[in-house]
Length: 599
Image (tube, rainbow, N blue to C red; front, side):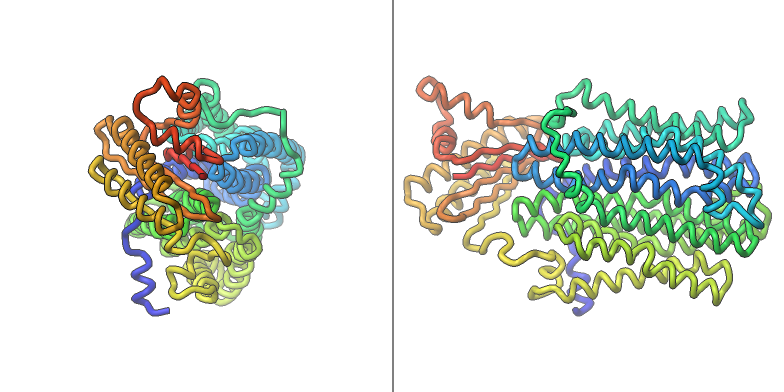
């Protein structure tokens, strides 16, 4: 592949609706992902300011295990159910989506309670396993204390991770953002209370994070109490046979997180073998800074996965192409800006986490922060590729690549560089690892079938989508565009074998439906867009409207109007279309109204 083609891949273009709503959803996912990082990051900063280096190292020892806990209890189930539900909603199966919603809550909360209970009972044994033994035995009690305090709130954290994607599907991004904001404020206030008033230890710091997770959960649960949601929890109609499907769909995310856990535990144990508490603390600082920023590339990757699942359900090749470019472009912008800031202010971030650090430890921490920052831009490519694999249903390689991301490449590369350079190799290895991971993704894409890199990157199965002559895509940004779309619809219908009568009905229905959206949906004075897609398939027609206006389900309205056909004025073509329709589905996802009519 030529470099020119690679650069062209990232150029702007595509659907205005997707671009606008991707940005809105991405920032909501960023806030959602920050929920995972806020607790440990705030705790790390407060502990770094008011406690000693040993306390910073103790939290660092537990950090990778807590990632593993969150993965088992929340990430696998959340990502797996999210992928499946996005496809179900894309196809109009609301009942199946609600069943998955209820099942995911039951699974995750049950697992988190079990994990929390076992961790509290065996906290000291777990801390010793993590590296608090031998030369680092002084870390045993503080590490165990923090683990206990944090795990008490694990079920509430798990619930927030499970609920957030569903709330985002409902388009209530403010609720998710408010949840993260409340969690941050509560965590900071509670930590300061522990330090300045209670003069407590790491147990109380962990409990403060648990209180913050509870506060975030209460904010999210209000969405289902006070707002009409597409999702309702119920023990009825839960299909437990879907558990395996959820686990398979979420396996890739689980593998990468668990691999990261084992890799981190291994590196911490190696650093502990050097009898270098300062090195553990420095590595913890670099990792904490990375985790504080990971929401930028994971927000883009999460949104890409969600939209990919939906567009695969619609077999919309053009939308998949658009959303790939949008995800990478926006992810790169945010990540590169944050990486540059970290590189410039590395000393500030090192001192932020190690206020009481000695000069040698601070020097190592600055170096660690810089190398972690250098690795960040590559994460956009790595995780967008991984999450696209998940969303597109390529489970086998998604699982393999997930294992490669955080174990198969990082472990041997880190070990090799540490053998060559000493404990500094733990952070020097980060950019090297990411370069290798990008190369693997690039090689995989280039082995796919397709005429160029753009087509290969879509990873489409055979017979996916529609031939160009069977598909018509139209954009409507104002009323003047409606008539043009109507005329194109007539030509498309005639070219695909429909008679003049039906072609006219399709054309007038598009005119009336799009006109209604412009008249009522665009009336708030804000810029809006409509994507119209016509598909000729098996002698029938599929008509899809997608807009970014206020949530409105027209299906019930149109069905009721059919009962009073003779008494209504206007809307004749819409009623004729409804009579011809074999199936009508509406879904409101990520701030998009999606109406699908099959004739």
